[in-house]
Image (tube, rainbow, N blue to C red; front, side, top):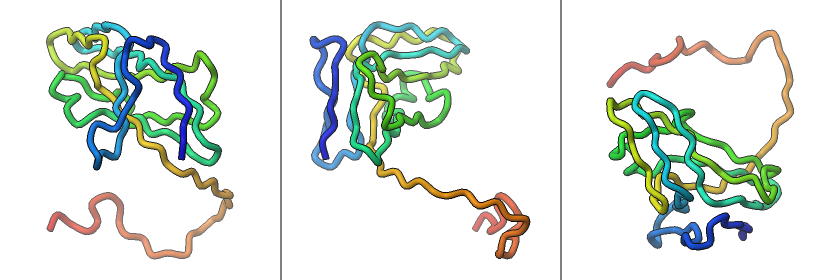
Length: 143
Protein backbone atom coordinates (compact mmCIF):
# COMPACT_ATOMS: atom_id res chain seq x y z
CA UNK A 1 0.00 0.00 0.00
CA UNK A 2 1.27 3.48 -0.82
CA UNK A 3 0.39 6.88 0.57
CA UNK A 4 1.24 10.25 -0.91
CA UNK A 5 2.83 12.75 1.47
CA UNK A 6 3.35 16.47 0.97
CA UNK A 7 5.89 18.11 3.31
CA UNK A 8 5.41 21.79 4.11
CA UNK A 9 9.06 22.22 5.22
CA UNK A 10 11.32 20.08 3.06
CA UNK A 11 14.29 20.65 5.37
CA UNK A 12 12.71 18.09 7.69
CA UNK A 13 12.89 14.35 6.93
CA UNK A 14 10.04 12.41 5.38
CA UNK A 15 7.98 10.56 7.97
CA UNK A 16 9.37 7.08 8.48
CA UNK A 17 9.25 3.83 10.36
CA UNK A 18 12.23 4.09 12.73
CA UNK A 19 12.72 0.33 13.10
CA UNK A 20 11.95 -2.74 11.00
CA UNK A 21 9.26 -3.83 13.46
CA UNK A 22 7.67 -0.42 14.10
CA UNK A 23 3.89 -0.26 13.71
CA UNK A 24 3.71 3.53 13.51
CA UNK A 25 5.27 6.05 11.16
CA UNK A 26 6.92 8.87 13.12
CA UNK A 27 6.08 12.46 12.16
CA UNK A 28 8.33 15.50 12.67
CA UNK A 29 7.14 18.80 14.13
CA UNK A 30 7.30 21.67 11.64
CA UNK A 31 8.09 24.52 14.02
CA UNK A 32 8.98 25.35 17.60
CA UNK A 33 5.76 25.32 19.61
CA UNK A 34 5.30 26.25 23.27
CA UNK A 35 2.53 24.43 25.11
CA UNK A 36 1.72 26.49 28.17
CA UNK A 37 1.26 24.87 31.57
CA UNK A 38 -2.27 23.53 32.16
CA UNK A 39 -3.19 24.39 28.58
CA UNK A 40 -3.97 22.87 25.22
CA UNK A 41 -1.78 23.42 22.18
CA UNK A 42 -1.69 22.40 18.55
CA UNK A 43 1.57 21.15 17.03
CA UNK A 44 1.93 21.23 13.21
CA UNK A 45 3.26 17.90 11.90
CA UNK A 46 4.57 19.03 8.49
CA UNK A 47 2.50 16.68 6.34
CA UNK A 48 -0.62 16.55 4.25
CA UNK A 49 -1.48 13.06 3.02
CA UNK A 50 -3.49 11.27 0.39
CA UNK A 51 -4.36 7.81 1.63
CA UNK A 52 -6.03 4.96 -0.25
CA UNK A 53 -9.81 4.72 -0.43
CA UNK A 54 -11.15 2.50 2.32
CA UNK A 55 -8.47 3.49 4.86
CA UNK A 56 -8.07 6.03 7.65
CA UNK A 57 -5.18 7.36 9.72
CA UNK A 58 -4.91 6.91 13.47
CA UNK A 59 -2.83 9.76 14.91
CA UNK A 60 -1.24 8.71 18.19
CA UNK A 61 1.35 9.87 20.68
CA UNK A 62 4.72 8.19 20.50
CA UNK A 63 5.44 6.11 23.59
CA UNK A 64 8.00 8.69 24.75
CA UNK A 65 5.77 11.77 24.36
CA UNK A 66 4.67 11.59 28.01
CA UNK A 67 8.30 12.24 29.03
CA UNK A 68 7.88 15.75 27.63
CA UNK A 69 4.91 16.31 29.94
CA UNK A 70 2.39 16.17 27.11
CA UNK A 71 -0.59 13.97 26.40
CA UNK A 72 -2.92 13.80 23.39
CA UNK A 73 -5.90 16.03 24.14
CA UNK A 74 -8.45 13.72 22.55
CA UNK A 75 -6.72 10.36 23.06
CA UNK A 76 -6.57 9.30 19.42
CA UNK A 77 -6.88 11.47 16.36
CA UNK A 78 -8.57 10.21 13.21
CA UNK A 79 -7.64 11.32 9.71
CA UNK A 80 -10.41 10.53 7.26
CA UNK A 81 -9.63 9.45 3.70
CA UNK A 82 -11.13 12.69 2.39
CA UNK A 83 -8.83 14.89 4.54
CA UNK A 84 -6.34 15.14 1.70
CA UNK A 85 -6.08 18.66 0.35
CA UNK A 86 -2.79 20.44 -0.34
CA UNK A 87 -3.23 22.54 2.82
CA UNK A 88 -4.75 19.86 5.08
CA UNK A 89 -1.75 19.68 7.38
CA UNK A 90 -1.97 17.11 10.14
CA UNK A 91 -1.61 18.64 13.58
CA UNK A 92 -1.31 17.09 17.02
CA UNK A 93 -3.59 18.55 19.68
CA UNK A 94 -1.99 18.06 23.10
CA UNK A 95 -2.58 18.96 26.72
CA UNK A 96 0.14 20.01 29.14
CA UNK A 97 -0.98 19.02 32.67
CA UNK A 98 2.31 20.14 34.24
CA UNK A 99 3.13 23.37 36.07
CA UNK A 100 5.79 24.29 33.47
CA UNK A 101 5.55 25.41 29.86
CA UNK A 102 6.81 22.76 27.41
CA UNK A 103 8.84 23.66 24.33
CA UNK A 104 8.41 21.26 21.42
CA UNK A 105 11.24 21.99 19.05
CA UNK A 106 11.17 21.89 15.26
CA UNK A 107 12.07 18.37 14.16
CA UNK A 108 10.96 16.66 17.38
CA UNK A 109 9.00 13.44 16.97
CA UNK A 110 5.94 13.58 19.24
CA UNK A 111 3.32 11.78 17.14
CA UNK A 112 2.97 8.77 14.88
CA UNK A 113 0.42 7.49 12.40
CA UNK A 114 -0.92 4.05 11.71
CA UNK A 115 -2.99 3.37 8.59
CA UNK A 116 -6.06 1.24 9.19
CA UNK A 117 -8.66 -0.37 6.94
CA UNK A 118 -12.12 1.09 7.21
CA UNK A 119 -15.26 -0.97 7.28
CA UNK A 120 -18.47 1.03 7.10
CA UNK A 121 -21.59 -0.43 8.71
CA UNK A 122 -25.31 -0.08 8.18
CA UNK A 123 -27.13 1.16 11.28
CA UNK A 124 -30.32 -0.61 12.31
CA UNK A 125 -32.24 0.80 15.25
CA UNK A 126 -33.90 -1.78 17.51
CA UNK A 127 -35.85 -1.62 20.76
CA UNK A 128 -34.04 -4.60 22.31
CA UNK A 129 -30.77 -6.44 21.73
CA UNK A 130 -30.71 -10.24 21.63
CA UNK A 131 -28.11 -10.61 24.39
CA UNK A 132 -27.83 -11.03 28.14
CA UNK A 133 -26.77 -7.94 30.13
CA UNK A 134 -23.26 -8.18 31.58
CA UNK A 135 -23.70 -5.55 34.26
CA UNK A 136 -21.72 -2.57 33.01
CA UNK A 137 -18.09 -1.54 33.23
CA UNK A 138 -15.85 -3.88 35.23
CA UNK A 139 -18.49 -6.61 35.29
CA UNK A 140 -15.93 -9.43 35.03
CA UNK A 141 -14.12 -8.36 38.21
CA UNK A 142 -10.48 -7.48 38.95
CA UNK A 143 -8.91 -10.97 38.89
